[in-house]
Length: 56
Image 1 (cartoon, rainbow, N blue to C red):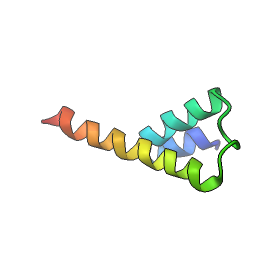
Image 2 (image 1 turned 180 degrees about the vertical axis):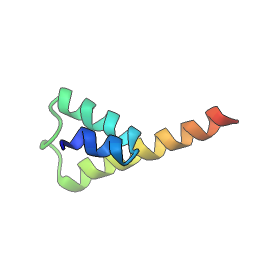
Image 3 (image 1 turned 90 degrees about the horizontal axis):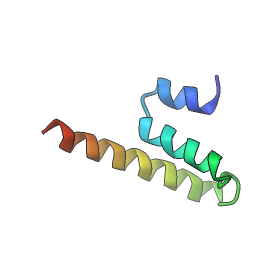
Image 4 (image 1 turned 30 degrees about the vertical axis):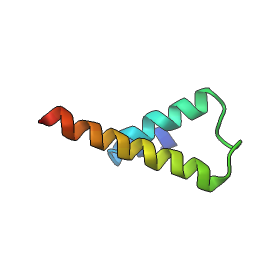
């Protein structure tokens, strides 16, 4: 299972989209691990926040 499949299986859809974007723009590995992780977590947080408003 690759990273995208694992993120999808865990229902981390925001992280999955951000990972794909980082991969396409070749950002992975340019930042420190902590910075990469922070971007992924922020993307997931934003995605979940947006879904809450869509449901209202």
